[in-house]
Length: 116
Image (cartoon, rainbow, N blue to C red):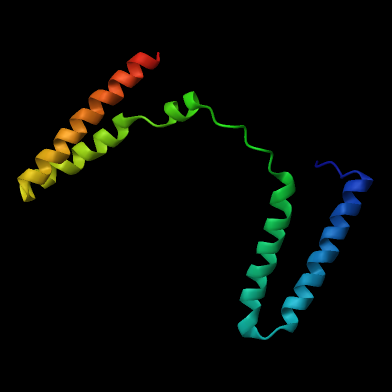
């Protein structure tokens, strides 16, 4: 059985329901062409007005956290996969992409090993 909310919470719920009902009445008085835009605008205003107070401040990023989040190994693997069809279509471009992929892959592996 769900617990009933405390009296202050119930009062807040009632206020929110009343405000929502007022918004519904205003939107329904508009022409049918404007209703969708008004709904989206009201939701955007509500979202913007409540996110500013709820969002905690993000901690400052350090150089180590940024370095850990970016590893050239992932880009090297992607370039390696893209280099294979490029080798068939236009070999010089494929070779360059494959060479860059190898360099990035080695760099990523070394960065991972040295970071530990």
